[in-house]
Image (tube, rainbow, N blue to C red; front, top):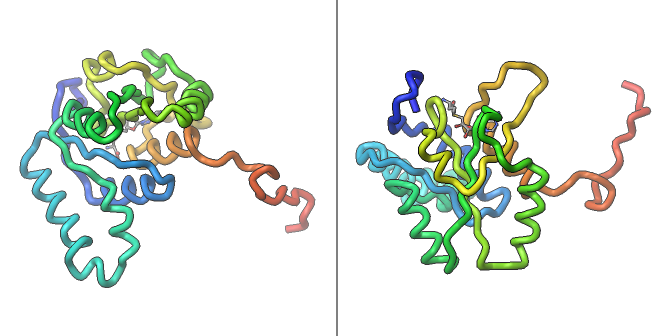
Length: 193
Ligand code: SAM
């Protein structure tokens, strides 16, 4: 949506592509769909990706392509769903996200547990939807199977970028829990500065 709550298709930013690709690769997610019906935005994204796949970008920075190759450009959510069905053999559960708690139905803890439970059931896949501009349209949110609770910071200010929101949510949902079980040393809180 835009600031007037009109349904739009916003511009894709280079920063979003790189950050979301690196997040996807770091957490070994199967893929990140860049969803836009705008042909010029799709073409711009394909040109950028070709620079890192075939061009000087790959020579200078091969690791970046290992991340960018997980991006998939599709026209709409249904196209993303179709790709997932073709690959995973099952239609994904759609989870919407929003900074607003008005329509949230799933806590991060519940979502994490569901994903853990699904990990042993390959036919259960999930697609996490994030918006740009002023967020996902209400029609998209209403069509989803669940809406995750918002990320809450430490103040009433709540305007995370899509990159920051995605990173926080992915880590909460599938990131390793810190602590001695995972070989993380207990922080020595008594250390002198
Ligand atoms: N122009 C902005 C940017 O720089 O990315 C786009 C903001 S866009 C609305 C941010 C998206 O990230 C939202 O549509 C939502 O999917 C997610 N998001 C932002 N804040 C969030 C929060 N507090 N909790 C959950 N998701 C949030």
